[in-house]
Length: 474
Ligand code: BGP
Image (cartoon, rainbow, N blue to C red):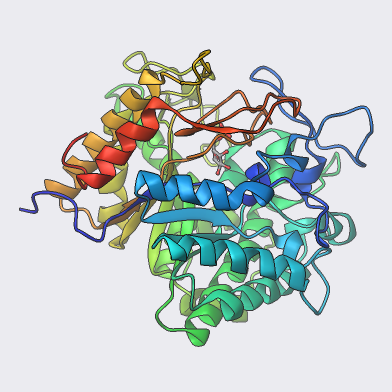
């Protein structure tokens, strides 16, 4: 039995370009969906406006100003002992509109500089190609992922990135939380992930399955191109993983929960196995969906399977069987009385992480990579410039303990652990700065006021020791 983590275990942290870089119109960058997202709060989701309105605040325009602070931030990560740092390449820095032939050199240069800075400290960059950052032009002109043409635009973007950075970046992911597309029922999230503008009478579910298909094909094509450019690249998929428990031991509840998980996670089946699971094909038939899935698409899916499965883990769900519902369309989520929630209502469930790691291993038999985990919380900067975030330490400690059991006792093959928002950044769901995840505090409020100075929190020193002891002291 393995005693602890391997020496090459990748400890580090994760972010996404649009949530921290700011500089949203600098050096030739085009506008992405994220640049049209207003500030929301925990009771009110963000909105996407048609134009950038002068009386509204757009948090992603500023982020935490990483674009101008990245050297200082990378140094702080190195002080923590990071072995890896996950970020995304903002699609619109490279292709401002998305459908150009030639990339924007200034955008490419920014990531060269960032990756060089990381490598200087022996921190491996881990890169997501698309993290909710579709060029708005592709949304307006082509309807986002509802249009097959977008596959080619994404693949061109992926090609340019692999070619340019393959000697600097070994670990890649194609789409962040690709399966969130069918999870959320709100207009915002659907739009944000897939760039589809729904019309009132659209069959949304069908359109989402279709868009997902185009994304899966684009992903598989990208995987093939990346491997052709450099066979040593490790190219993975990325899923939002929330285990779904049955509300009771009633067999109908158990079956319902199983089917809910299958439905949310079929993306992983396609990425890993190279084909659709039968239950979904028969569902398309039952619903009489005339899906645009060509023979060539199926071949691409088969030839572009992923090297590993990356995932975010924040919470678990519970589900109860209801006989009037079509389980593929809607899952009846119920509160789980055994689990506490955070200030934003997210269930805190460390054991669920061990369960998830085992679930994925049994199903997909691939190396796994935790590329997001953490708790959003309100932090307070004390007058002596400290943040005593014991709640964050407790959350991460409990999750790392369960992760360790999965690696040591269950022999799960795990590449690394990159907790989310290692430096405070803009929340994806609400746009708030005050929903903080970081080990590093950034002095900025929800409206862009503040010095933007960086301050290590108590969790910074705690995590530094976790890394230094390779997870022996948690
Ligand atoms: C994931 C996203 C991230 C991140 C995280 C936390 O779904 O991949 O971009 O933001 O959730 O969510 P939030 O920022 O809404 O707290």
